[in-house]
Structures are given as structure tokens and as C-alpha cells.
Length: 114
Length: 114
Image (cartoon, rainbow over all chains, first blue to last red; front, side, top):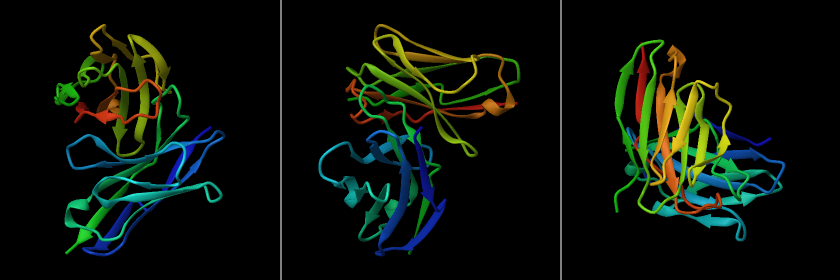
């Protein structure tokens, strides 16, 4: 069975500070991993994904994540937070090939302080 | 290119009624997935379709059903509504059949059951 744990349901950072959102996964098969962002009253938008290959993945809006198999982690980072980054972020895992049945984490709401 | 369109955006029903939600995927996308989002359970997979065939179903009671039409549009139906069915129902589409492509989400249909 697969599962995703996001540590911290709420994270606050100052504008310009490092953003670190944590995601740990459990999977019996090589996982496909995703980060999505949801702005208020909107659907989810893909930030980045890891399927195979390079373990450091760069996404949109300056975000990146590193797949660490030994730590079963896929933490999301951004060097400098911007006010527009305030949103809810979801980590997700899937078995990959042939399905869009994702297991989502419970989400982390990011607040950016001026 | 138009995004994923979900209708209606908001609706209110009473217990025992049924509801049908509609999803029009991005033109050319043949994979459609549905998710239920609630504050308590987060995002949970309902079902996914490809070329009118249901490929996977989540762990929901039989009151939840769906279908996909030949033009890739999809509907989901919930019969005998319960208070706990109040949620944001999200539809997502993809051009990829393999499960590694990007899922494009609609803004959702927010169902309130009284």
C-alpha cells in the first residue's frame, strides 16, 4: 500500500525566507511523486514531478524537490518566499504507469509574512 | 485552449436526493479522473476513465458512480445523498494514458448536503 505524510499542516515564513515543505512517502513499488499547489477557490496545479532519472527536480515558480530514496522523502523547497506563494501544497504518490490513482497527503497551508 | 470545465460550480441538495456533476476535459485529453476533497479526509480518489472505460475505482460506496462519453466528457453521480457527501468534487484530465503525465484540474463542484 502507498501513503503520504506531510509534516506540518500550517507553515509560516517571512517574505524572502527559505520555504521548506516536508513530504515522506511509503510505497512498495518505485514511486512516482508529485507536488501540487491549490490557490483559494481553484483546482490543483502541478508544481513538479519525479518519475525516473534525476533526483533533483525543478518545477515552476522557482520550486524544486529532491527524491531521497533512503529517507523516503520528497521535500519541496524554494530559496526565497514571495507573497504570491501563499497557498495550500499537496504531495502525492502513485504507482505510475497506467493510472492516475494518486494518494495525496493532507496538505500544508503556506503563509507568507510581509 | 480551454481548461477543464466543471458544472455546476456550486449546488445545495438535501439528504436522500441525488446529484450529477459534469466534467469537460481539455480538448484532446482522453483520461479523466475524479477526486473528493474534504477538510477532514483531504483529497481522495474516486475513479478514473480512459476511452469510456473505468480503469480504477476508489474506496467509496456504490452510491458513487461515474461514466465517460465518447467525446471524453465525464459525469459522476451520487445517489441517496448523505451529510458526509458535502465536499469539493474535482475532475482532472490528462493527455497521457500512462499515469506520469500532468493532471490538469478543474475548479471543482462544491456540493453542500443539508
